[in-house]
Image 1 (tube, rainbow, N blue to C red):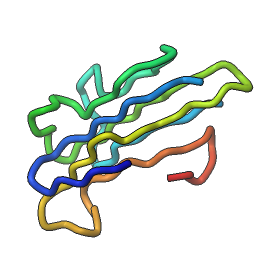
Image 2: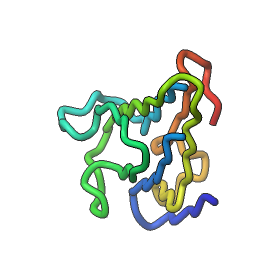
Image 3: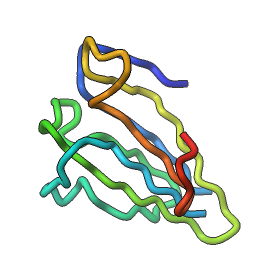
Amino acid sequence: MIVLNMNTYAVTVPFAVAVLISVVAAQDTESPLPWCNVTLTEDVGTLTSPMYPSNYLPNLFCNYLIQAPEGQTIELKFSTFDVEFGDLSCQYDSVKVYDGNSPGIA
C-alpha cells in the first residue's frame, strides 16, 4: 500500500530480502551524503529518504542497491510515500525500481 501525503518530502521503504534490485530516489544531483548511495544486503530492513523525517536537500539523487543471493526475491513495501506538494505528476520526487539492468519495473 502506498500512502501519498502532499505536505512533506519523505520516502519510507521497508524491504525484505527474500535477484538484484536498485532503488533510486531520483533528482538531479548525485548526493555527497554517505548514507544516500549504499548497498544493502541484510535479510530485512527499513530504508528512508535522507534526513527523514525532515526534508531532504534540493536536487538530490540517491541510489540504493539492494542485493539478495541468486534465486531469492526482494520484496519492497511502501508504507509512506510523500511527494512535493502541488506537483501531481511527481516531476521532482520519484522512486524508480530496477531488476538488474532492466528498464524499470515500478
